[in-house]
Length: 286
Ligand code: NAD
Image 1 (cartoon, rainbow, N blue to C red):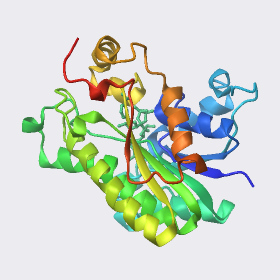
Image 2 (image 1 turned 90 degrees about the vertical axis):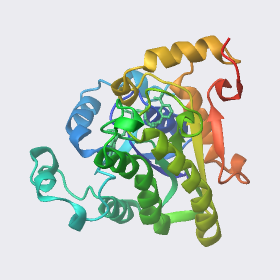
Image 3 (image 1 turned 90 degrees about the horizontal axis):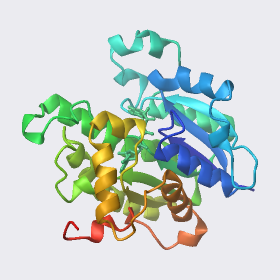
């Protein structure tokens, strides 16, 4: 049987989640995605109308098939956690079963189990503010959407993950080196995500033989990155200073993710793997 993957954080064809989905599909996996509720409508409409058909093309010429799109808001674990103003919000009330627990239950009801869990989502409402100007609310929101969301997803999907399976998330070097402009507690959130990768690798490894790794990716002009505001500058900085002077394509991260969740990486867990043209190794701008 082919592997089945659930990829949380796909809402267009520009980001890392989409590229990971494609790499996994090219390797023969069945693709399920979790799409942020406010972005669900436009994503499904665009999919249906063929807007992504060109970017669905796989190396063998066939088109990636997304078997099912699940609405998801990874900031809420159970229906009891959802505040009234969100519940009654038009975009949210038109979808259902989008808390993490319910999404895992839906996948279980539809398919029974998965082999691969991908976390490719982040959100920091105050990302453009320096840490010194970040509110407690903004900081905690960044951690909730970008770090605890992974703890929660793994917790709820682990019971339906087949032993030998694997999970992967996406992090950024701002967790360990100061990147001015990556604010709002997002640097803190990535530090938490990387630390949690080690602890969760231990716990999920011992309990369920599941591997947990994270990819520290170089800069990509995704929708989320554009919201931060300095992504073009980071791409240029990387091009100028990295050992490999080429633009980083999302597919390169997708391929690394496909390797890390495959049996080829069966002894790799708890790791932060850099997929950044080597930029992290430099100590001097050139
Ligand atoms: P993206 O916009 O493609 O992905 C982010 C996704 O998160 C979006 O689809 C968005 O709808 C979703 N999302 C936000 N809040 C959510 C919530 N509460 N529940 C569910 N989904 C939610 O952008 P991307 O840059 O590909 O981001 C994917 C991952 O890659 C993130 O973790 C990001 O931090 C990481 N990353 C990105 C870069 C970069 O330069 N783009 C570099 C390193 C790491």
